[in-house]
Each structure stands twice: as structure tokens, then as C-alpha cells.
Length: 618
Ligand code: ADP
View 1 (spheres, rainbow, N blue to C red):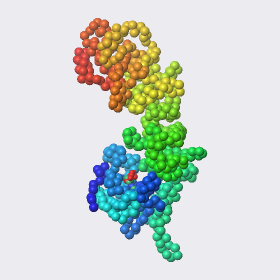
View 2 (view 1 turned 90 degrees about the horizontal axis):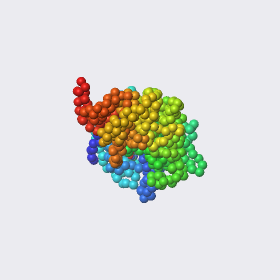
View 3 (view 1 turned 60 degrees about the vertical axis):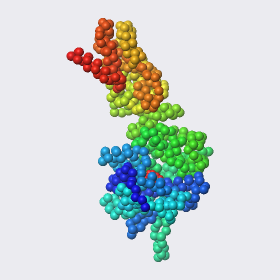
View 4 (view 1 turned 45 degrees about the horizontal axis):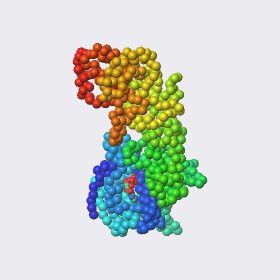
């Protein structure tokens, strides 16, 4: 027998369970039945795929057995089981992405911990909410040696080999004393077990059998009684299923303890039959933007579980959608590789996507706002990747805008508010709302009363470049191209007056800038930097470089405000050949860069020049 230590993160999670943060402790049974159900799915599939696997699959089921004297409850399945190494890996450690992050957050915020941990699902460890000792005996299907694992939920567990374990896993809980005040009920009581199973696990597609005593003709005998209905929820019609049943099912597949925001049911009949039950969660998972985050519903074929996370059925930008798809006409032998090519799968995927997008479109305002706050940044990825549904995505998208600081706007709303003579949908990308709002590029748009979309998500930089228009109006960055806003100043005359300054400055700043010209977008700032219509923005340039792409240095255009004192004085200084004019030009460029939230290439030099200038002025 060996004594091993839990991985540090596992230990922390266990601590949370032992000193239980949940008031609802009943759910431990749901978690154990859920694991058992998965194990049965897996053994059926494994036996199907490997005819030589020596697995017993004739009577797959889950058994519950309570012992009032010993105060134990055992959950037993004859599923796939675990090898010794798997027990150590799967039960002794937590492999889930985002765990470290979650535990850090949990430590930071004491009050909302129950809320946070709900995003994560606790599985097997929830046993320690109700038990002070847990014994697990398991034998992997096809293997002869079994493994016995035991722990009191503190720092360590013991592990040992056993010879006579049946196939599958049994988990025996040595129950804590009953304590109604702490929501610790008598989990050996038949009525309690029935209640929990009916509530949380009724839809489990395997029989859950409870050992009960029956008295017939004065004779008492024990037998196993099936206490769940086993009806696959997705195959039942919507009015037959209670809202709560859907919610429990959602918990079962998603490990998210909050209710889903939206439940989507689809039943397609005819030549190509399938059922789908999809859920949009009410909040984003912690790993929504992590590279390894999984996606896709569970795939069943004729009620037989085939795989978790069937990515072929869901585009990446809808990776947060959970659920089940049950297809009638696929082979049980499908692999992930085959699925990617399969025409039926592609057709199904297309329909699922359309249905999800139309569901979002028909959400009421409050729901939609929650949805967009949680998932909008992911959905916008579809604007870049999903050409077919671009229009629909634009229709459901909303964006922060200068119109109302509190409320994002849809594009339709924007277009309705467009001013007479305004041709484009204007936007500015940047790191934050305040940087964008205060950027010099906005000045003339503000003065004209033109609304500007404020785009601050990383993905915004990508889609604005690839989406040409909405409702016939082009998207136009306020920081790109020539803007003719007719601000009233006589530009032609001014161009003549400033020609000397502009060509001299273009030469002076040629390492950083490709051209210096007069601006019609500025009302109060002396200068700003703009790109040509097709230029890559500085943020995008940075993103590309971070991804390891080689780019030639991108030079933009410096625009000057001919009415600003600094610019007119510089013109004079240049005409009079004053010393230091070149340095002032350089400072002017630096100021424009800082004003848009950019970074100076040589900050020490900039501050030195500026300090010198200030000293002189004083
Ligand atoms: P989760 O179920 O969320 O993955 P758990 O902590 O409940 O997390 O379980 C961890 C892993 O241990 C499972 O993913 C599964 O591989 C394995 N496991 C748990 N219970 C069983 C069981 N009854 N039979 C086989 N494997 C199991």
C-alpha cells in the first residue's frame, strides 16, 4: 500500500469541499451518478470499437446501496473503470484548464466563491462535503488487476492493488453525522436518495438501481429497483419536459451550476434525422479565450454516446454553446477525422449555427444584453471566419458608441441615427474607451455630431478589415484615409501657405512618417497620425508581430491642424530658419503618437527634448 499526496491545486479544492462552501450538499450524488454514467458510455463505445477488449457490457447499470448501520452509501457502476495510473492521474490531480486561475480568484473574493466555483464543476471531490472518508475500488475493463483508493480528504490518499474487484468503479462514502442545520441529510434514507435521483439524474440513459427492502406475504427481501425514467431529454417533445429537467440536464453536461440563458431544441425529420438540445450559458467560462478551450456538443448516434466536444459540429466562435446532438443515420464507428469531412455533419452544423444565431436575434433586450456582454467578443470572431453568416452576425452584434456611453448600439440603430450627408459607418479601434474618446482623430467628428463606434476588443481590429459594409454603408476608420468633413476652413489656400513646412517636415520625420499633410479632422489638437485606407493599424501590427509574422515597418501620415498656435509658430520658426525647429517637429510627432495611446520609440529622448523646451519657455 502506498500513501500519496494530492497535487497542490487538488488539495485546495478538497479543502473547499471539506469545509463545504455549498449549502446544497445533495448534489454530490448527482456528480457521482454523472461520472458513473460517463463510465458506462465509455465502456460501451470501447467494446464496440475493440472487439477483442474483454469487457462485460450485457447489463450496464448504476447501483446505489445504503447501509444504515455502517452509515455508508455506495455508488457502483460496471463501466470502463480506471487503471492504477489513471486513479492517480484523474482522482489525485486536477487537469482542467483554468483551475489555477479559478483558485486564485476564489482566494481573492470570499463572498462570491460559491458562485465562482459553480463555473467549474467539482465532480468526485464533492463527496467530501458529506463524507469524512471515501473508498473507491475500481477495475478497468479488459484488465485483471483492480485498485483500491482511500482518503479522508486531507492532504493524502492511499492506493493499493486488489485482486477480486468487479469491472467498473464503486465509490463508498463514509457519511458524516446528520446535521440538518448544515444541510447534511440522512443519505442512507431511501426517500432522500429517490428524491435526489429524480431531481437531478432522471434523464440519465442508464438504469440507476437502488437496493430496497420489499415485504411480500410477510416475507422481507432485498432487490434492486430502477428509480430513474431514463428518457433521453432531447428525444422528448418540449411540452413534455419541465424547465427544471432541462436545467438539470444542462448541469450534467456542462458542469455549470448556474441556469442556462437559453435552451434550444431542434428535431429534424425526413431523409436525414437528428435531434439537438443546445444551451447558451448565462456566463462565459473562464477559458473562453484560452487557446486550448474545447468546443462542440456531445455527439450521440441513435442514443449511443459517441464523443464529447464534437468540434466538427460547431464553429469556433460559438464554442461556448453546450448540448447534445443525436443523429440517426451516422455510423457508430465515426471518428473525429471522418466527421470533419462528412457531408451530413456539415449540413447539421450549418443548421445548428443558423438556429443559434436566430435564437440570439429573437432574445428579449435584457437577455440579449447579458448574452452580448458575456460572449460578444467571441461571436465577433465569426465576422472574420464565417463568411456565410456574416450578415446575421452583423445583425446580432452590438458595439459601444459615442451616442450613449451606457448602452451599446446595434448597427441598425447606428444607421437610423446617421446624419444627412453621412455616408459611412465610422469607427475607431483602440485599447480603451477613454483613449478612443480622447483621441484627436475624433475631434471633427464630435464637432460635426457624427456618431463613432468605439471598438476595444482585440478581434475588432481583425473584422473591420474584412467586413466591407453593413446595409450598403462602408465601415470607415476615423483614423484612416482622407476625411473630408468640410470643417469650414479654406484648405486650398492654407495648403499653399503651409507647403514649405509640410515638405520640410516630411523630410525631417521620414524615418517615422511617410507624409505630413494638413488635416480637416482636428479642432483642438495640433496634430494626429492617420493611416492610408489599406494600412495595417499599429495595434494590428503589434498583434501580427506577436504571432511571429514578419512585416515591413509601417509608416503612417502625420496630419497638422493649421489653426493651432503650435503649428503656425512652427511654420514661422521654419521660415525664419530658427534653431531647434527640427526638434519641435519631432516633439509634435511624439505628442500625436501619445494622444492616440501609442508608444514612443525613444521615450528618454522625447522627455529630454520636452524638458529643455519647457525650461526655455519658463
Ligand atoms: P469530471 O467528471 O468533471 O471530469 P471528476 O473529478 O468527477 O471530474 O472525475 C475526474 C475523472 O475521473 C473523470 O473525468 C473520469 O475520467 C474519472 N472518473 C471519475 N469517476 C469515474 C467512474 N465512476 N468510472 C470511471 N472513471 C471515473
